[in-house]
Image (tube, rainbow, N blue to C red):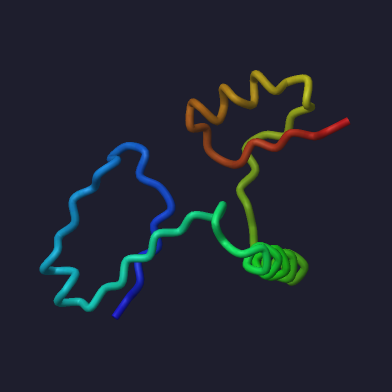
Length: 91
């Protein structure tokens, strides 16, 4: 009776699904594309995220904080898969 929400499959554009095991579990597969969601869904999500941040319920592992002038280094870190979030500080 669970729900699987999928938002991307770049590596496998046509993924294979284990049909019968999913049927027996009564699984729902939901494809999510933020670009076609209603504006209210975006507003609700932003409000929920802000509330969670204010309540200190969300934490992030920051890998590096760089000035905008170091954007090449930031992209390289992300492409390498370095641990933590790469943050750019705008002037």
